Amino acid sequence: MSTHPPARAGRRFVLTGAVALTAVLALATPAAAHAEVEADKPQALAENVTLSFVSEAESASAGFAALRVVLPEGIAPTDVTLDEAPKGWKLKATDDGYTVGGPALKTGVDAEHKIKVRQLPDEKELAFKTVETYSDGEVSRWLELPTGGDEPEQPAPVLKLEAAAPGAKPVSPSPTATESAAPSTAAPTPSAEVTEPDTSAAAEDTATDADDGMSSGVLVAVIVIALLVLGGGAWWLVKRRGAASES
Image (cartoon, rainbow, N blue to C red; front, side, top):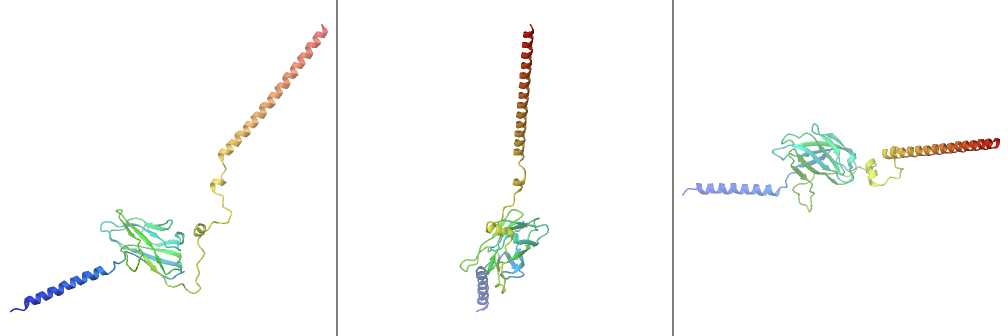
């Protein structure tokens, strides 16, 4: 009796088991992040920190055209400047972060950019929620945060920070942050609308002055005419009486 069939069956069993094990491990392993962030100084309260962002290309038919990043609490949009980006891309501040974009990248090319942050907040980790837009209008959102120890399907880029250095303190807020955080006690600066003369009011005042001048002139003329009439009438009356006396 040949022993080859059982041997082949054993090899098939081992191969099938290996494939099944690989599939189980693949399903159990969390998906790799498609949007990531790193820092040259990942430390709380560190100043002038460069953050590097990488968004992995997923589309098979279009390239990246723009990224929108929501800054974590403690970093104001005015405290961020663009350090590096794809050619032609520009940064524009928004109410809660910034957008960076420009000419669409080639299909399959990752979007990488760097920003300079004035100071990192005193936190253990920072999440930078990111929305990616492709040239064909497709949108990919990386906004989810871990909850209950489970890795989300589309996690937001998270930067873990070391403890602040001894003696490190928060720098003074930017002017914009100060104005938005508390009302200013200083006297308000007059706006252009306030300092510019009100041409309509001026025209009205001029018209009023002209009317007043015209009214005064007319009144004087009337008085003069009345005096002349009275004077002429009195002269005529005196002359008539004189003629009557002579006759």
